[in-house]
Length: 113
Length: 114
Image 1 (tube, one colour):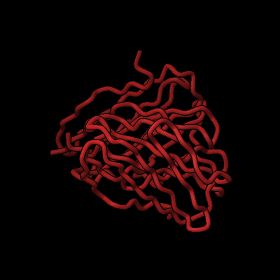
Image 2 (cartoon, rainbow over the protein chains, first blue to last red):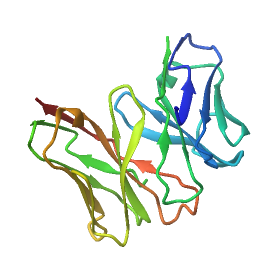
Image 3 (tube, rainbow over the protein chains, first blue to last red):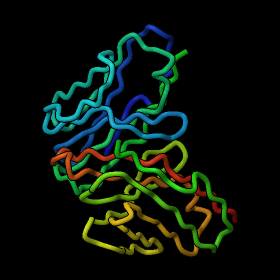
């Protein structure tokens, strides 16, 4: 069974559109994350939620809005997509301890044309 | 910024050889982790070393940590073609509280030729 699953795997859309990426984990973890990986493989944290509560928001534009309906789900909605939003977005989860490894999904490759 | 830097950016070796990757970071940490990323996939956790540890082993992996130099190395012994992937170090920060926030380096791309 997939531990951290994200959908869709690929997303191609035009500038100005609004899109969502969904993430679900079945590991029973309390903490979930969104990371963005650019074309140079640089991975940067965007958001973190602990038990549905936002705990990290890393100066991400307001066009990005995470939503956590329950602790097993963390979705990412992006408004007014821009060319620079093209990247691979990874969802991850972990137990609520700073020494805990992250469990990553397989990523969503977003291409904005 | 506590962004880690990895060295080299790319490494190509023959199967059976050892591969060494290095990571440097900027601020005090609680722990350092190494992850592997296969092409088109998510990152997979390999090993975690705490700030009070100097060396750790897991199978063919050996990780060292030198907190005085703020650096770590990952050694893969007797490499296999299946080890071909990108390898990332990630650090937390002693100042980040219990948020679980990790800062990743830019990775080393390892190619192991059969």
